[in-house]
Length: 124
Image (cartoon, rainbow, N blue to C red; front, side, top):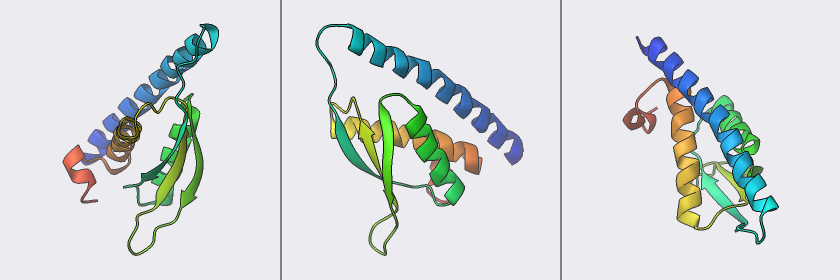
């Protein structure tokens, strides 16, 4: 049953990500083609809950494939600080909003890789 749930989460994550690419592309195209830019560029440090190399690579790739965001680098974990990504946002109107977007993406990904509910993600 767990594998079936994990497969479901993986499929829904891929469909969600495939939808985000054209949605964000349209947002970017609209901004470029209309007068006045709505951009609010920012570089944000995003602490990861992802533990494995695969999860880290998957979240990095997911961020980079989405128009308007780009993973710039990674800071390895230290005893007092988790592994973090540095992400460039073209539309980071608020720091909290950008972090919330990244957390939502990571939660979807972790459900797909770990096959557990949102509550179980923290435990894995």
